Image 1 (cartoon, rainbow, N blue to C red):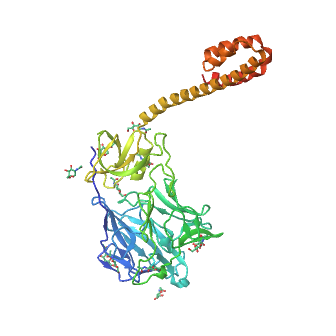
Image 2: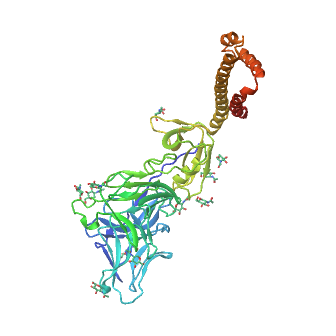
Image 3: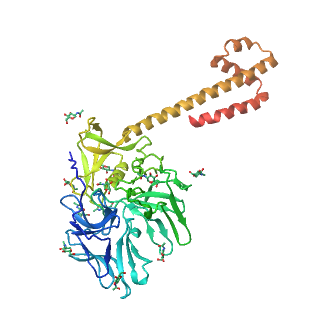
Length: 476
Ligand SMILES: *[C@@H]1O[C@H](CO)[C@@H](O)[C@H](O)[C@H]1NC(C)=O
Ligand SMILES: *[C@@H]1O[C@H](CO)[C@@H](O)[C@H](O)[C@H]1NC(C)=O
Ligand SMILES: *[C@@H]1O[C@H](CO)[C@@H](O)[C@H](O)[C@H]1NC(C)=O
Ligand SMILES: *[C@@H]1O[C@H](CO)[C@@H](O)[C@H](O)[C@H]1NC(C)=O
Ligand SMILES: *[C@@H]1O[C@H](CO)[C@@H](O)[C@H](O)[C@H]1NC(C)=O
Ligand SMILES: *[C@@H]1O[C@H](CO)[C@@H](O)[C@H](O)[C@H]1NC(C)=O
Ligand SMILES: *[C@@H]1O[C@H](CO)[C@@H](O)[C@H](O)[C@H]1NC(C)=O
Ligand SMILES: *[C@@H]1O[C@H](CO)[C@@H](O)[C@H](O)[C@H]1NC(C)=O
Ligand SMILES: *[C@@H]1O[C@H](CO)[C@@H](O)[C@H](O)[C@H]1NC(C)=O
Ligand SMILES: *[C@@H]1O[C@H](CO)[C@@H](O)[C@H](O)[C@H]1NC(C)=O
Ligand SMILES: *[C@@H]1O[C@H](CO)[C@@H](O)[C@H](O)[C@H]1NC(C)=O
């Protein structure tokens, strides 16, 4: 059996001292891995953070809460981790703001087109890191970290599109709990046409919020407001709470949405989660889209997290480190023989897949390994056999019933017919018909004789009989 190795997110906020400032100055001190910037009211910190398992920890320039060492809200180099602690954020004398490391330049944030600037980069209490030029009045934001979101949505940030520049603001999940690379499977976007928020998994719609009406969304359990702006320049949504409403006593009494690697949007204010938790494969409630999959995945099937062990010791692996747990679930869903899945556990990154087949024996006291299991499963083989058996049985039953109904109708017609005939002809056959009226044999013989006796007058009724005959012959 594959052994599931549990890895824990290691986030090391290793800096020893803060610059005791919230600002970088043009040509002034730079920021390296042993110092940080702290926003004015000590709400946010900008600095270098190490993320990953013990073996593969990588360094990122990030922004996080002052005393909360959980998950940085913003990362400057999520696609280009620095392997050592050589990262430096500098605002040089020529007015270039860039992130460098021992190997050279890593990220260019801004390059001043003029030599007469006096740039400052300020970490604000909103969590926004903003570059401005004092020499041009300091009003215009030359660059903002809020314009390049990672996976966290804060007051003051936008989700949507700037039509003039074509810039879009969206969130993208980490690949796994320990890998922040922007190849994560989930995005969180604002759809200006539908006026709704959308979670996509690998570009396929996974969950929708429902339309924004009266400042609330159908599938978001929240009453505080959203501001939606739609004009020729922009289409976007943001929290109505703005950053300058912080109070020193409750600096975090505002909204925060984080797009988790598993597809959940977690609301830090209501503690609610939207998306992945409710979308389990075949349900279309609570904003979920049904996953595309083969016919063997019925509406009874869903993915659930279960502890236990698989009876079948056969399993298969895909060690591709670009696959998140959600990709693994998608692959499993699309393969009728797959019944459970986990990330491999062989890599430090909690990426790659291990697929299981057959039944899971649950572990009620919860000490066994955890898997995503497809429950309510009717194995594809049984299902098809049932269909094969049930379909002909149903067909034959229906045809049989139709035949009986036709026969009864035909006989009723015939009786009526013959009664009319008998009353007309006053033949001696009447007692025989009455006595054996329920028996087809006698009736048939009798009617055949009568019909032969008077063919012409029955032509209309013969046609009716034929009309009833046709369909039955078809089904037989
Ligand atoms: C960071 O910069 C300070 C000076 O601002 C310097 O004393 C310190 O050695 C630097 N640390 C690293 C790791 O480069
Ligand atoms: C962080 O600091 C605030 C007050 O400054 C305090 O209320 C909160 O409990 C602290 N959080 C942690 C995780 O230490
Ligand atoms: C930049 O602005 C600061 C404060 O506004 C000022 O003290 C400093 O002298 C200016 N530097 C230059 C080179 O103009
Ligand atoms: C939208 O983009 C244009 C062109 O880059 C820019 O001038 C404008 O300020 C942007 N609008 C906002 C609100 O960022
Ligand atoms: C919109 O919300 C307000 C305040 O909650 C409420 O009074 C009003 O009835 C709502 N309107 C609609 C159309 O739901
Ligand atoms: C958070 O803010 C809301 C409104 O701004 C207020 O009603 C609520 O009491 C605040 N909560 C705390 C814990 O301060
Ligand atoms: C790994 O998975 C990614 C994402 O599905 C795919 O694009 C890539 O081709 C895969 N690589 C290999 C070697 O299979
Ligand atoms: C499903 O998984 C089994 C076992 O790994 C494999 O043999 C089969 O080819 C897969 N089917 C599809 C359609 O990928
Ligand atoms: C995937 O990784 C596991 C654990 O390291 C290894 O046993 C297995 O052979 C690998 N599979 C492939 C196809 O490389
Ligand atoms: C883990 O992730 C890091 C950072 O993305 C990457 O450099 C490393 O190659 C990955 N390791 C494996 C085993 O996939
Ligand atoms: C519960 O856990 C104990 C100790 O780990 C184990 O011996 C026992 O078999 C478990 N019971 C079940 C039903 O899994």
